[in-house]
Image 1: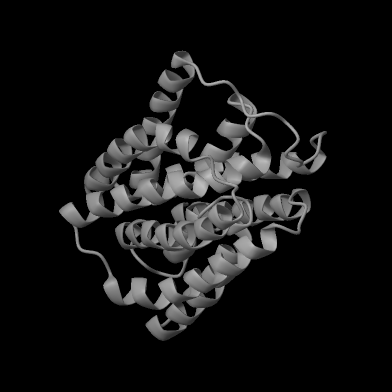
Image 2: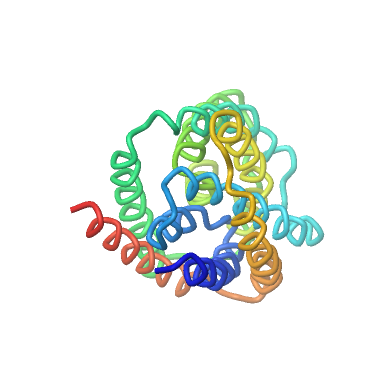
Length: 257
């Protein structure tokens, strides 16, 4: 595939992915990176560009959630210290990790997350926000710091925003309402993505033309997706995204073997 065709495909698919993922409090980094890799871009360029796309998506979509009062600011900032330190470290040291190891990590990451998203289709319960906000404790804060640091490492290393990890953690472990968790995750992941970008920039060159071109598509898609999220039930689309993740994992696996 020539560079012009690869850029066109990157723009089209990034717009679609930003639109879909922003509806569920996720930046789309779990698929931006493998998508760019499959289109022929190097692993490091793909991961660093993915982090920038995540930052654009989460910032754009997060503003919509903020206007609709769906972001818990206090809870969000509890995640920031750990996720910033972890993401910067992951981005900085990504250069020293073998590309094939990163690709195998991508495959594992996509298979596990795909299964988790498909499972939500059959999971009992609904997506209402009737549950009360959980009571914050010191033990909860310690757990959040440890978890957020680990998510930050994965985020910076693989170029993923971490929303696909943060949202389930907030809803199933911390017992936050679904939409509040989705909205809050945008703020959390914006810090993670920014720290990961700085980590990559400190140790290797970013592809600024690619970022600019694809970034516009992601900015528009993320904003539209966040607006649409206020009207949809996410289970069916989440299951569809799970199958997309599996398809991307299969493509990378074929490339590896």
